[in-house]
Length: 94
Image (cartoon, rainbow, N blue to C red; front, side, top):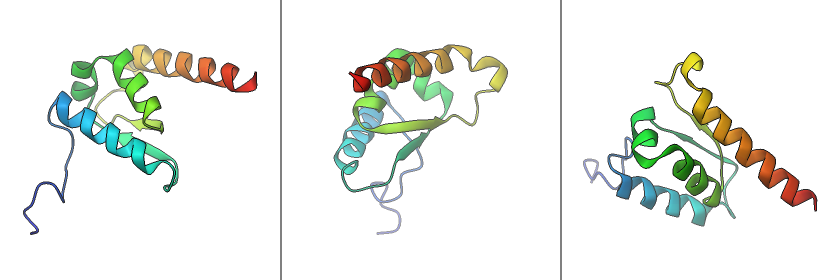
């Protein structure tokens, strides 16, 4: 049972797996503390920056750790995240 990859999941290996993980996370948000993803930038990039942020937000993710993305190169992803946060914050204030 310890070798069962469904129990020990080291990270998303494809867009389908990432979508499945985000769907599962969406089911947990009512019961769990805030959820933060930790993914390689290559996975996020292949999924599409805008699509990743939209899918993650829809699933209830509140943050992301991207360990292989240097701060100096994080601008595009950070800009998309900030835009999503400001849009959702302004909508929630109405």
